[in-house]
Length: 415
Image 1 (cartoon, one colour):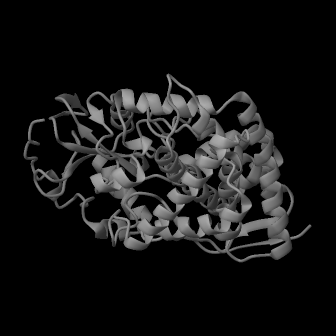
Image 2 (tube, rainbow, N blue to C red):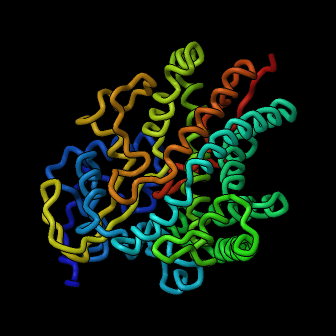
Image 3 (tube, rainbow, N blue to C red):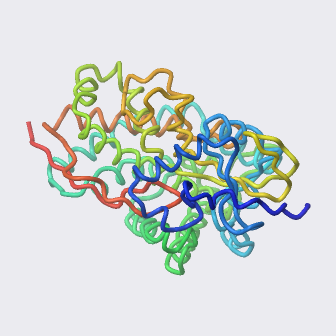
């Protein structure tokens, strides 16, 4: 691979915010979105960071989509996060599917996709409705103050654990480990996982390895059984691969959905006209509401790609070894695609948001499940308690990676 070409210091223009500066990600979200709007008006993607060690920012919808659908030139390996996963971490914990390309990624995705049988998916959809009802039952009974811990986190976590077949006696500890692993993912520590987070991840891997051994001996019809007993071209998931996949599910299937749900309540509170429209005819507007919540909040802000061969895109020619960052948070506000992009409108149609990725081989496998979870939960939340609302603004985590909600106070009245 050729050495990355030294990039011009385009981002040092006084009118441009520096996306490589951690202080940028501590600005109010409105200021960051305005900075992205200025970047979208440039003739070509701007460069941020030290020459040869920084990245080009893909901020327009068309550019993010095109790069997402061209893994031959824009590779996920060696890693989609910043910094890249260390080689030792991959050796110990397994390589995540999001960091794979080509045949390796296709084989892993085939094993996972075929494990989601029609029977398993039908059971999962039925379970989603039951979990939503139970979460709201407990909310009404306990009357908690924090929506994230009591509702938004619980819904996707219970669904994923039920889907995987994680026994009840492991769940409380796994939930605590998830918080430990993700609590410091933010700007101050970059995206490096501190020692406590690594220990939490290691413990979850051990739990999954134990369950994998049990399911190989005694399959139970859950997703773990399907994954470790699958025979796709003579392959199934190893215990380490299962642990890596479960870790991915906890981020892609739990954290992102939890954040979308929390942002959803805040948005529906802030826009009572949209909430009223949804309540009046939930079945008509539910799909559009979920899509608009995901577009407007964009739970995953960005992923990175590595250029593998010379490629022209967006007014610039990229060369092997250079890094590009796909900013979904900017693409989802692109004026060239979305009319009045800062407006929250559940009737927006079409709504080609990139909240689940920009297409291509890494498009989110769990997008349909996330849609079902959010619909089921908001149906319960908007029809059972009265005047459910956020109290104040969401408490956000300063992060360049995800639009994470730490806490959100809320209130409601029983009917």
